[in-house]
Image (cartoon, rainbow, N blue to C red; front, side, top):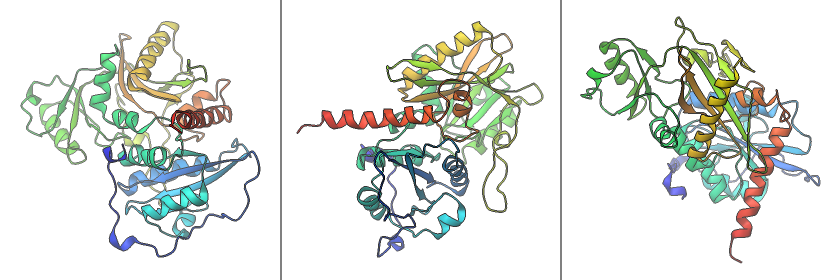
Length: 385
């Protein structure tokens, strides 16, 4: 299973002669305490790493975190080296000793022995390979979707096609692999262009002419080998829909989360999500116009919930799900993409949504951890003795 995903090859000069860590492993674990390892960083680039560090730091400092939890931290850097800092703060990460993958696995398994893994990596390998590493190799249950689901949802074209097969409405979409694709001249304009497997609006463009279309495709191909060219759904509205799986298997719908768009500001770009790095090299969330709970009439809410539940089933989400929908000026709902992440930070959409329900953290946190531990126990029972 693990070999299905990108398996990092470590640099030969990265070997550490002795396994050392900045984490205090001498203190005994109090009875009834759970150990949650927060895994952050990126193997792709510093941008994804900065996003990951931001969310891990905010989660670690959450005021609602139950005192029955011991938070552990593991950081993976673009050079494929692991570190075990005392916190996600830059100084602590830099002070932690570097380790190879094999050393890190031994240390996690034999010394840290976490009960559950909280994923904060948002690069493609982080969302697939490193979840598989914990769940399939280290036998540490992961909160949230499994690597198969993450691999599918990361691919915008494939995830839309699967959802469409289940009855979800999607925009007209084409997959392009060459800048001179012969279908481009016939694309209805305006159109949306975006890399197939990138997040955070990297490479996203709204184009109004054939010349802009060719330039946008060429640019998107610099970050991905496949590009999605999609029907532009004019505003309208852009609404996120969140679902939480309850212990009995039912899906609880959450208050809707709206990003305000307009003809003057029609799409959400990178600038709507993150600011540039500060003098500490850390990203901050951008301030954009949004509202939760959104003002949604019962008819629109029912349609959003219907399509979200279909998408949740189609993509085989677990614990929770989060989807972006576009509503055109006539009120028709279109599925844009799945966003199956929760960082357990104050500004995280799923956290904001659950704050308005009986699932407000720590309830949501405990629910997700409990379900992850149940999966591990169920898998253990299924093993032959």
